[in-house]
Amino acid sequence: MNSSEDSLSMHNFLFTFQTTHMALAAEKRMEKTEYDSRLIPTPTEIFAECGFSLEIELAHPELEKIR
Image (tube, rainbow, N blue to C red):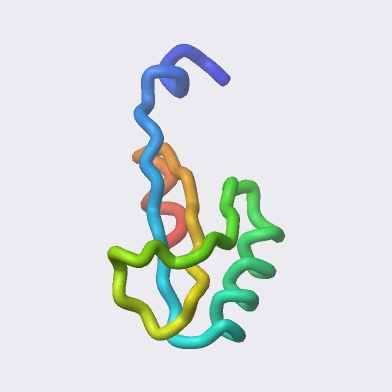
């Protein structure tokens, strides 16, 4: 990692899903990428139909890559 990458702030994103099947499929797809992600219980403060959410940590420039 170079110094410009060190200075980038990281952001956590939380993706919610309608079904457990969708959450597991997203987790499997993310395992094939270079991004750090993990399946977590959906926080109780967030209304979602599924009890699982996918948390992804990204630096700002990486956001454009996953659109």
